[in-house]
Length: 361
Image (cartoon, helix red, strand yellow):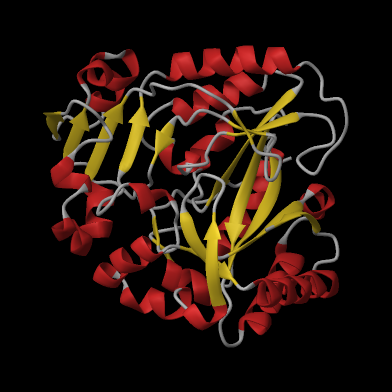
């Protein structure tokens, strides 16, 4: 049998010119590895990865939102290690190995706490993060009963505040986590991505990592998923990742309500049905995530991508919502949201009946 054809390597989303680094992070093994990869970058010492006023607190950075993501990297040390219970997409939210992203999706919730810039922050004490997770997994024992997260394994989301496939372009943090989970038979890693990174195909996850390709109608993605891989590329990669040992799911995310959304989602589901291999369909499941937004992010977006706000910020259709972490956001009004979820489930049943909806929010 001829070897599988690897997907083409996409253009690098980075041109790192400045690295803001906590001294401990820069001096660590992982920190030195990262810095060696960017010898041309100016390294700027900072006391805390959260406190870089001229970066995070500078309103003048808004117009450079995407450029900062390409040119700036932050190195920090993850101080607090805790796995938070979730029960929705995953059983647990793992301690972050990174925060922020090189992609510039206009609806992303991560920058809401950072102000006017949201580049990648890598946490260099990955050995401590992996060690903490090993102990946490061990203490859970075997999962007592199936739930919507997984029928048998405790699922840990390792990418709540970052895109692990993008982080893998910068360092081995993602690889270290995938390799660790393959040795833990009672647990499974999970992360969502909008990037196709062929290097992940070599990590041998042995079914213990679930990759969730986030998809939406290409018309929405061209407007909102700034710098992300094209949606057809994400769909096309599913078979390669399944063959490499990943569990492959999909995030239908976010669902943005605007004129014609139903027809565009139907077309996307038909594309998935037409192009995905039978083996992917046999094990696939989906999360449906309706758009939530935030006034502070709305104001930031007006400074760099106002066209996105024409579909994201719709006060007549939205209402306030207090999130689990205490943030005050806006979501679609309950009646409109429930009706849209019913419509989307109907479209899935009609055009992709093999796609089990595991979670809808």
